[in-house]
Amino acid sequence: MKRLLFLAVIILATLAGCTSHGASTLNLEFDFRNGDLGWEAGFAQYSREQTEIMGLEAGIRPLPPELGIDGTGYYLRGMNRSDDLVMFLRHCLGPEDGIVPGKQYRITIRAVFASNAPSGAVGIGGPPGEAVVLWGGAAPEEPEVYLDGPSYKVRLGKEAVLSPMGDIANGLPAEEVDLRNPPYVLLERECELEEPVSATSEGELWIMVGTRSGFEGSTALYYQSIAVTLEPVE
Figure 1 (cartoon, helix red, strand yellow):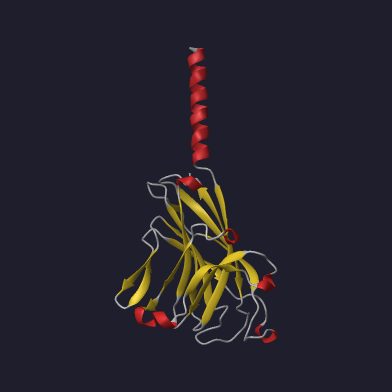
Figure 2 (figure 1 turned 120 degrees about the horizontal axis):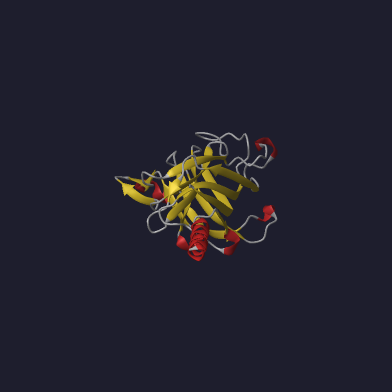
């Protein structure tokens, strides 16, 4: 009897350890000096007729030399002709990343990126730094750009959670820089999503980082890295 009780305790302890391991806190970092790492770019909130004048660009490019950092970043650029341009990166996490199917997670997202938008500058519609809001988000469904009548929009799904991370003003006073060729500065922004997000039954969870612009001009950013912390909700 004692032997059976001892074996039962061992089995329960083992199962508890497996459960804890399967739903442990995950710390993931994606450094774009190693390529795109499966991240994809998306653009939304502009009309189909404006496509040719939006100047949309995305891809892995060398970081600006003034940063003093060798390697590449994920470059996103757009001319905000629509007065509401959204530019974002998305990535799907899965069981191979440690995501547990159906599990809820509290999520913190940190972005390291280079911005050439000086602080306190004047711009049409708003300043090029303070009027461009950086945000982070997560969703069980894939964020999809689709054509809704004449306009491109992004479908996030009902369970998506987005939180602001601040703006892209880089701290250099506008009156002290050459506004024709403003230098890039490396910045770090972070947010904790306001609500937990659940993975799908297949263990998929999409992470997003992007901007929404009120500045009616060109915005060009180099994302150097994105880090994600996922804490399981017990």
